[in-house]
Image (cartoon, rainbow, N blue to C red):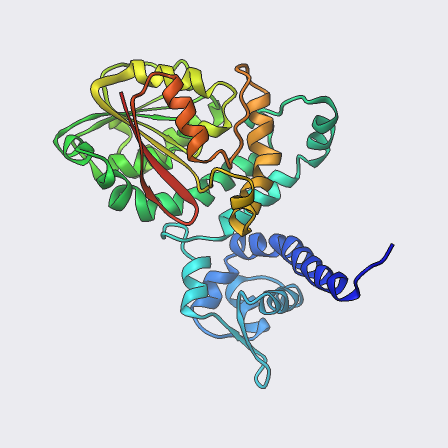
Length: 351
């Protein structure tokens, strides 16, 4: 075998970056759980000072800080042995209620990888792995991964991009949030539109239980009716708006879900479909974002779809063409992209 040494060294460099990022994911989650990022954002500190702030062990904190500095997640001043955070690092790593919060993505990744033995076996058998069968960290991490994007965009750009929907919700509309998970999207809409009522459903009972608790804590529980139900069986009709956030591609029967959505909508209703950012061809998705989503899709999205009846496994990179085909087959006549972010595509679907 004739190996080009320059190309080999280039590939080895890619491997080193990938391995470092993979192993460092655990340290990001540790830093989040122990409040290390938040404490360092309060002001520069030595390892001993940061350990005192967080009531943790100095030796562990020392190694953690060195790892974070090597990865560019904190700053290091060699002459003083002091660590600090830039405004940008603090913005992205310390505020779970902000529009950008990175630790949740690493929490999701670590929880996802715990299914590796089952996923390996599923490759051999073709069997599915349901969302409810994943590690509990997957459910929590997924909510923490997507919620910042919803905070930054749902009520400020996505809903305003839909024809006439914002006015309906301000006046007092009826909304069904399908596959609501821990309820982040439902709660945000309920907080913004105080005259509207909401029905939120998910087939995962533990997620619905968590969503009820969070809605009550947010003061909107009385306007949200939570239900354990699939996207093909959720209750109610005459909705002004039905929403699905980052979940249509996970379903074994998205066509059945789409047909049920159409039946549940008012004649002038709107279906808001938010999906992971994707182009329509594999070649166009061979980029860093596509790599993230293909990886999660291999461990989460495709296994979940294959665990359900319906015969579909769209995957996280279905793209507009795949989603359009499903909603068109279900009888919808209007489909357009209404908005986008680096991580999501937002579609408006009408009867």
